[in-house]
Image 1 (cartoon, rainbow, N blue to C red):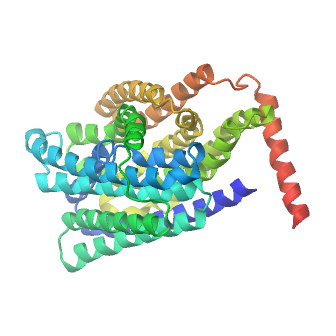
Image 2: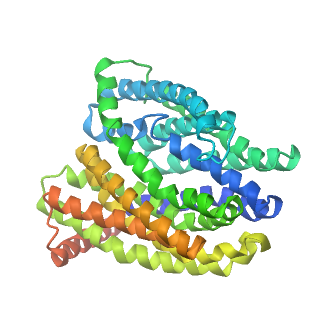
Image 3: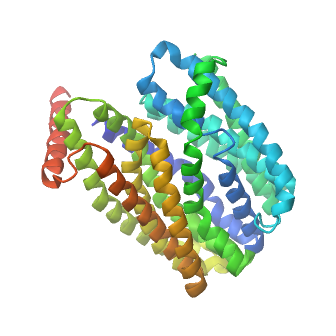
Length: 436
């Protein structure tokens, strides 16, 4: 019941946070041409590309540290993580500003200043995730979603001011994203220090632990970046900026399913980590049962969400972007596969076997990119979306296959695992009702 209530809170919070920038979509698709919207998509892609390096994935280590480090050691560990996040962001910004002019064809012709802003945005997001991730591990969902909603609202408010008042067009949207990210990162640092969840520290042992945790994740995150953005790079290369804008608008609609999957995993992680750390055999069965149950649940959610979005697509997209509806079913399916993958990937994070997860991600990314290239060339933007969904399905399948070989869980006992999961869920529900 605790997981269920947290899941409801995270779902409401994620939907509310996403609804704020989502409300921008009908406005942007009417104010910006597909080429201008393509530049907004391009900036977001560079932000995503910088994420593995700007911050060194310290937010992932902070979330796990709550479960495997002594409480008295945690503030210094988080403080060291913040220091690494800020310093790696500065270093990455210098490198990106130097390389971007040499890679203009790959980076959609973006000026170096946009590369620097994208890097700072990526690093600021990592710092914010340190605060959000720690609250998630502490099972404080209300604080988590409140800060998430404030960040989203600020993002949209600054974007609207830059686009409508200053008249900066697509550049205004990018500036709004960057400035809001920096302000929220500063807020996250203040909250961490004020709550004593972090103190500034440069412990050699903590630096070593964070680097050893984060470096093996770089191939994993880069693989994830490739899986999540290869379709957009390929659409831009093969079909041009205008089609990238149309495809990006469709992808924005498709993000709804990913948002729901993210809400689920925020509630699911503490429950999963508690059972993985338990010696009870029933807890092991419950873990497997939850993974199996997630498959039909995510597929049914994809169908229902997709139908709702399709019915409202004329209002959300506008006339210039109506062609984007052809990609919607594939993004719904891809989002369902993402949820399935999330259920399994946290086994690797809990055990610290991030290098193994990197192998899974990079292999899926390479195969998926080849598939997207072939399908986009044959079927245009719909083919790219098909390839996106197939890549997410491939990732979920490979991750599950590797996990079943590497982790001693009752993978082959589907019926018993599901039965124990149901029994545990309803027993807890009955107990909570009796107490009420």
